[in-house]
Length: 153
Image (cartoon, rainbow, N blue to C red; front, side):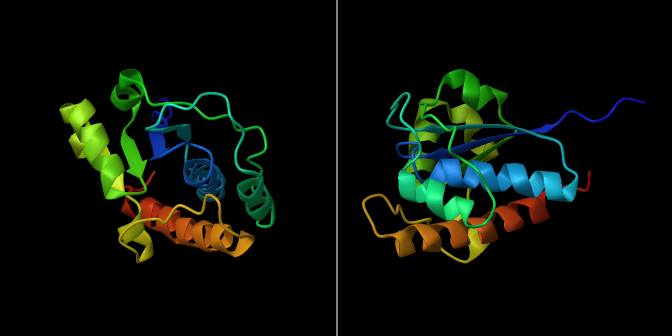
């Protein structure tokens, strides 16, 4: 009997330099801690290519043992949307943009904020370190909530 196919997770934010790299790192670490097989991609609806994660995002993730220093931003392709089993978004506008782009993906899109007790995950870009920590801590709760929704492996 072969192992089940890894769960394919696409994490989406605006520019793919703050929230989605942080969430992607948390999903990666959370999956490993839970013994879950995942394949991960992340991207931004703005389509910015090749930028590193925000230095403050890298720093606050390092504080909790998650290394996102190798991250480089990407846009979202239709292939990404088709590939994913779950598309995790930070804001209602991300959900709307993806639904408009590929209506068939609607059933895969999950807004993360409500899983962590918030409507949306605020963008910390341009803010102080405490804003990045607040986003990171909210994303940790959201990612835990996401894993709670998945069927047992």
